[in-house]
Length: 291
Image (tube, rainbow, N blue to C red):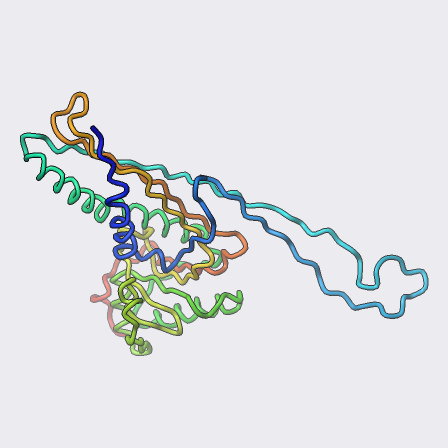
C-alpha cells in the first residue's frame, strides 16, 4: 500500500522553502513550467536610430526612415537538469503504525530542511555566481574596504541600468561582521516584518542585505549583488510517498523526488555582480589589524 503525501505535505514543504531558503528574493518564476521540463525564451534585437530624411536627396533609394534592417530573433532554451530523489525506511520494530506515520512526516520535514533546501540553494547560488554578467577582480575584503567594494558593485549595476529597487546584497556571516565593523557603513535596520520573514536583515545603499551560510556559497565567496529579474529558478516538488510493507521491507518505505534548476538570462546577466575573495585570504575578520 502506498500513501501519497503530496496533497497533505506539499503545501507544508513549499512553506519550508519560503521560510528556510532566501533564494526567492534573488530569483523569479516568470515562466510557466507546468507540465513541461523545457521552455524557450525569445530574444529580439533592436534597430539603431537614424536621421529622418525629410527631403529625399537625389538618387537616394529606400525609406526616408533609414536603411531597413532585419531584426535577429533568437531563442534561449532552458531544460530542467536536476531531477533528484531520496528514500529511507522506518522499520516495524522501531514503532507501531500510528507512530511510524508521525515519524515519516517529521523525517520528511527534516529531510527538506537539512538536505533538500541546502542543496537547491547551493546549486542556485553557484549558477548565479558562475554566470554573473559583472565580476570584480578577486580581492580580500576587510572592514576598511568592504563599503567601497559594495558601492562599486552597486555603481556597476547603475551603469548597466539595472532597476534600483529590488536589489539584494548576499553576504556570508563573516563578511557581515566586517560590514558591522566598518566605520563608513550605517545600515538601516527598520525592515518590514514581511521582509524579515524572508531573511532580510538590513538595507544598505538602497539594497536589501541577507546572510547566507558559507557552505551554501561558492568557495572564496565575498559578496553578490543581484536583481531577481536575472535568474529563473523553477522548483518542482513532484512526489512524496510512504509505502507500507513493500516487497523486501517490513515497515514504511519513504520516497521523495524533486526537480529543479536555475538559469541566468543572457540579456539580464549584468543584473548580477559577483565579488570573489582572493584565494589566499585566510585571515578571520576578528584577527584583522587596524590600518
